[in-house]
Amino acid sequence: MRQYVVDELRKNEIERVEQYLSRTCQEGGVNRLYWLPIPDDLLSEEQAKHVKDCGPHCIGIEITEDSVVFEMLVRSRKKLRCSCITYASEQQRNFILQFADRLVRETEVGA
Image 1 (tube, rainbow, N blue to C red):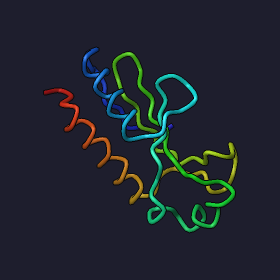
Image 2: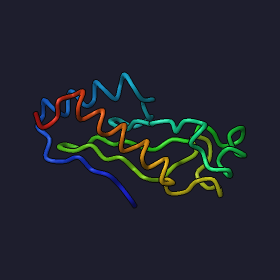
Image 3: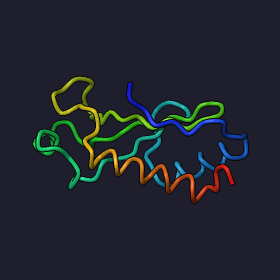
Image 4: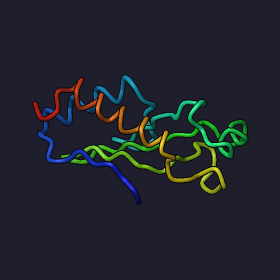
């Protein structure tokens, strides 16, 4: 799995990250899992065709004991398998990394 990981976080930093993700993302059905929707204008042609049947398209963000993990796989929230589920394009990857940078900055992780 391709991922971007921010690790070696302290307990108080993890708490701030959880609060931030609770405000800015959709909570997953599993503890410490969040969904970051990919904006429609960043969807691939295939994903855009599948919005009705497969959308929303999101990436998973998981909080572990001392890290936050951003998946680079754009998933469907409705289906487990479909041709529209793919690794992030360059534009989508940039969106994910900008979100991660904003999270680090606004939660003062590593400050």
